[in-house]
Image (cartoon, rainbow, N blue to C red; front, side, top):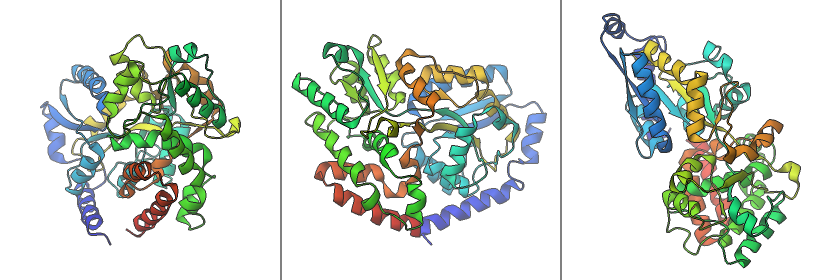
Length: 415
C-alpha cells in the first residue's frame, strides 16, 4: 500500500474514532455552547472567486447567530491543502469543494458526515445528488450539492455581430468560425496555460460529448483504454491550439479574463465561473455562452455541467449543531440565490433559478437535459491531468498523451 495513503487512512480512522458516532461531538463542546459562549467553526472552501460572496454570507449568518463565529479559510491550491490537513487529522467543521475526485476519495475514507436521508437533501435537485453518489461510487450522499456550473465557450457578442457569425452547432461550423475570425485579423481564443488547470475546461467540453457511455466504468474493468476511446478527443483538443495566441503558456487565468474582457479574443474556453471576473474588468461587455460542439451530430453535443460546489461537514466535528446550522443557512433559497447571482452559476436548490442574461443561452440546453458531468471528476488527481495536457500541447503529441494517460491510470488503480 502506498505510504502516503496509509498515513492518510490511519489519520482518518483516528479522527473517526475520536468522533465516536460520526458527527456526535463532545461533551465539552456542548457545554461551551450551552454556557452561552461563542463557538468558533472552521469553514474551508476552494473557490477564490467566491471569497467575497462567502464573506458577505458569513457576515449575515453571524449577525443572525451571534454565538457562532465562522472562520473562513480559502487558501491557494485548496484541494492539496485540504488533503494535507485531513492527513494530519485536522478536518475543518464545514467544507465546500467540488463534486470531484477529491470529494470522492475523502468521502470513501469516512472524512465526511453521511447526509443520506437527511432532510437537507429533500430540497435539492435529485440529478445533482445522484451525480455526487456516482462520482464517489457509493449509494450514500456525504454532502449536499449546492451549485452547478457550466463549461463551454464564452463568446463576445459584439465581435460575432461585426463578423456576421452565428453560434455553431457542429464541430465543422465551429472550426469554420475560428478560420473566419483569424482571416479577419482577430484571435479566436485566448489561452492561459501558465495556470495548468486552465487546460481542463476545453478538454472536458470535448470529452463529455465524444467519450463512449460509461467510459470510466469500462476503463476500470479493463474493457477499454484512453488510447482506444480518447483518440478523437485528444486530436480535436490539440487542433484548437492553432487558433490561440502565439505564446500559449505566457499568460494565466487572471490575464485571460482581462484580455477577453477587453476584446482581445472572440471566444474564451472557460466555465461560467469566469464571467464575474470578466465583467469586473469590463462591465459593458456583451457576452454569451454556448456548449462546445465537439461532434458533427448536434444531438450528440452536450453541455458540461456538474456539481461545482457541495457543502458537507466533518464526521468528527466538535460542533455538529453549529456546523449544521451554518449549512442550513447556506442552502436556504434566498442565500442560494445570492450565491448564484454573484457567481453566475446554477443552484442545486429546487426553485432557485439563474436569470442572468449572460447565461440565458444555456437555459434551454439545461432544461432539455443535454448535459454531462465533468469527465476529469472521474480521473484520479494523482494522474495530474492538467500537467499531462500541458505536455501534450507543448509536444503536439496526441498518441504520446494517451499512452501516458493509460500508464498513469493503471498506476493510480494500484495505489
